Amino acid sequence: MQTAGTIQKWGNGVGIRLNRQILAAAGIDLDQEVEITTSKGRLIIEVPDSVLERELDRVLAQEEGAEELIDEALANIAKLKARVSRLEAKADEGLK
Image (cartoon, rainbow, N blue to C red; front, side, top):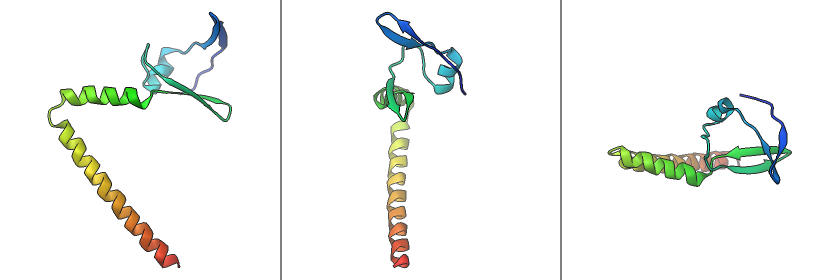
């Protein structure tokens, strides 16, 4: 989704007014903490990892057995990463 905006004076600072649809498309709620960074002439607005982690903890607390599923998924990811590393090492050896 793309929208246009105007940077305007807001008190002693400046602000950009965003419509609710663009916030909803980004998964950002009103009054939600965000991080704003710049890169190559762009402003990047993101929900910080700490906020996402707190939300995940809240959801996990409500779902019975969720932590065990996540632990199992993380173990599987670690196994897959190890397998990829072994395959990459074999591929590198084959190229020599």
